[in-house]
Amino acid sequence: MVRAWIKGVGFRPGARLDLAAGALAAAVAAGIAMAVLELWRADLAIPFSYSNDADYYLMLTKGVVAHGWPYVNHDLGVPFGQQLYDFAIGGDDLDLLILKLLGLGSHNPFVVTNLFYLASFPLSALSAFAVMRALGISRATSAACAVLYALAPYHFVRGETHLYLSMDFMVPLGAYLVVAIWSGTPLFRRRARGRGPLALASTRSLLTVAICAVLASSAELYYAGFVLVLALVAGLVRGAARLEARSLWTGAGVAVAIAAFAAANLAPTLAYASRHGRNPVVAERLPQEADAGGLKLAQLLAPVPGHRIEALARLGASYAWSQHPETFGTIEQPALGTVAAAGFVWLLGVLAMAVVGTERHTRESIEDLASAVPADARRLLVTPREAILVVETARL
Image (cartoon, rainbow, N blue to C red; front, side):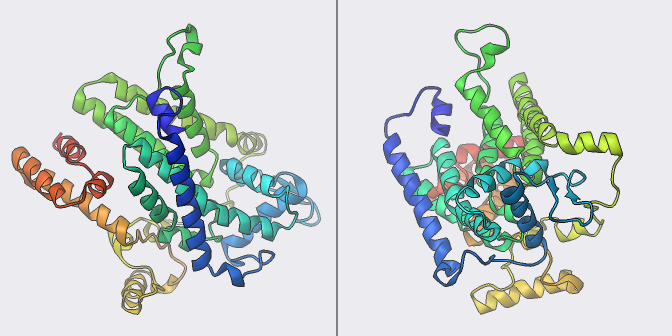
């Protein structure tokens, strides 16, 4: 589907092989996840997690299954019943819709929640595979890296405690929007035949808008917020570097589309707040949470506490304890994992060369480093051409 978007015409030759490879990646990701979770020992009628935020998500699932949608639940909040209009759950509309569909097969909220979480593994693999193929990465490498993405530590650490963040299949789609803006790939295109606003309703434009809708309807708007900001930055940076207005308009168009869908999803909460006033005690964040969840470089690269290798587990636990001994075990654990950490370090090296090296020396260094990496892996991390584009931008 994404490949069709880029080409602007139906499926390209080899689409059946792509579908088969994508399905294989999804199946492998699901199989390995089930093995790691030891699913043969589990009872789907018992939640995988039953503490902290997991209870909140189970409550939402119960509201969807028993009452159709979770805004109002007369089984809770005695004596007047529960209403969640103060709590902005509109950013989860897509997640809630998936739960509602799963609820057609079972009225047990525990079963529905567990199935939702298990489905996130193959869906993430499929999405990552489609985006990597769209970026021109080979079929085999796309399939292997799609499995790696679906099985990243983040997916298991979030688990059912942060259920909607675990359903992260929209992240590769959002990443594609940002990369497309950065590289100058058109995301909006006019139809050959058409007048007025309908002239913009091309396949490519509609699929871009659809991705924005998915981002603005899931994961409590966290992923949507990142993509919105990065799209604006990519448009501004490329527009300034290349002196072109199209990138500016494309970045702004993606940001506006995400914001518009988010506002539509949050309409019940916004209307309720307009009528009754803002509730100041709902979901208030504390200043210190910016430190605990701030995506520090050390957190990204360090092993997670509880790593299967004892030495790495001690290292991760030691760092976590040194940072937040009073909340050890409850802070964010955003470790990238070995493969993603290697790619991240590669990108940091590219940026470092942009800062300290001359343009010619930097180009030669990038090409020398790239020649030491297998072709597919090189394309996955960053190609010499893309790295040089990063360098040129960093020199602005």
